[in-house]
Length: 476
Length: 121
Image (cartoon, rainbow over all chains, first blue to last red; front, side, top):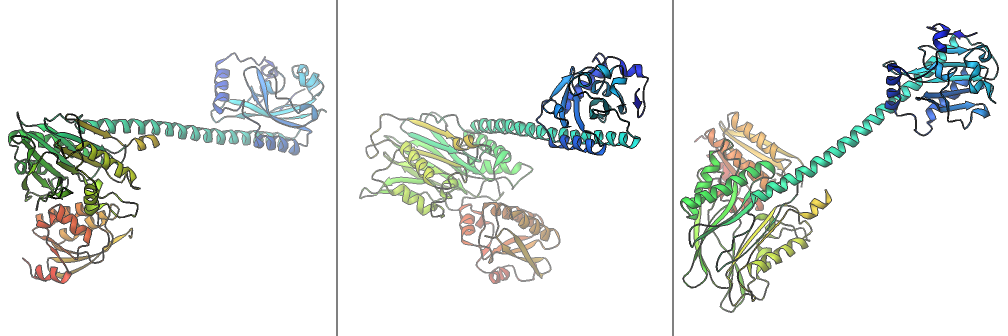
């Protein structure tokens, strides 16, 4: 005798063997997998539902089970010593396996009177289950994952209210599973988003670094009779810096060099950097005169629609070999911190003189911009030092900027004039010793004429140092 | 250093505004300076005096904004004049040559006298 609480089908339907042989069953199993509930650790929420079911129906035992392909898994078991420790049973028809195939609750007042349930191991075994009632745990899209079950060792009849309670408790389990699933999904989505972001960040850093390299000369050329050294450091590996420099041949004998600093950072600054570099090179080929070249760059930057908002500081010079040795340097600058000319005075003391160019204005900010030129001689043993404000605005341990005075002191505090390479090396060491060494981009360019007053040096060397803040790449 | 900036504005002449900056000008506050100054220029006072007596800190972002304001004032037929410029900005204006185009006065009174008080032109 079987008591059907709702939407009861004919007994024959219930008694059909519970084999996962149809499409609905495959979809049901997919739903069980989706909620990821089979192999999760015991959940206090399911234990409370089982306890509640037993108490509300005044029964000695209750369970929460999930039906897998061929096993019934116990997610919670309350009451009856014999139920403790059972994690799963074979999926044989009669109890859970039958209940999970029905829409409504299944109530079997006396299992021994039910031709299918009577053969179930829980009925025939030590436990001797005589009463069984269950409500399916049904997903929003109609898949029954398992059941909430109430069991007794004596036959009994329950009220419609009891059955309704069981259905409500099953719905409560479903709510709990939905919450868990949505939390799992959120976690998964967050993890995926994090992984994606990390990948994106790495590829963006790689892209910026590649772009940066294309904005810099790959290496300084070898200029006969001149030693060159440079250094470049971006404030962040993720930022394409705004500092730029180059050294290139003008004709058979003359060479040109420049250094600049674009206002701002990032991709917009990078476009100005690229435009500035190419314009300077192109203009130098037409007329290498420094004032003319800076005027051409000023005009070019102002033709853009963003006229006046994208500008840079620039120092540009032409090197012309002197008859015996050394170079005549014609220099012009716009808004750029002064280059330093390192020589010795009559007493042999190292002097670092800023090359003053009065009135040189920012390049690309004003149509009215004026640039001034000056000519100096770079003698044997002397060095010309160019830098961007990332050096003079670097903070010392005392919190003050290095400044012009600090830089002059640094350049003069030595026994002899350093070669280009030695000076750049020393400056890198100085920067590394400052606490706030990654505040801004820094570019350095030194040109020296090897000679007796400089440290012994074999031949002429051109060194290029380009670093994209490896310490940052490592951290992020 | 403060993290806010506000402009106290008075209009001593029909097309002349004096904006006293209260706070510091840096990456975060420069947009305030830009927006407020451009609004003054667009609303009938293209002759603008920026009084910087109460500004302690003014960085290169601020300089960039000054250049933008200078262009806007000029396009509107006006002028941009600075008064009581802090030391670092003075050095920046000199290094970048911007002081050749942007009149700088030691005090607001001097700037007002230079700008002809309320008279236009």
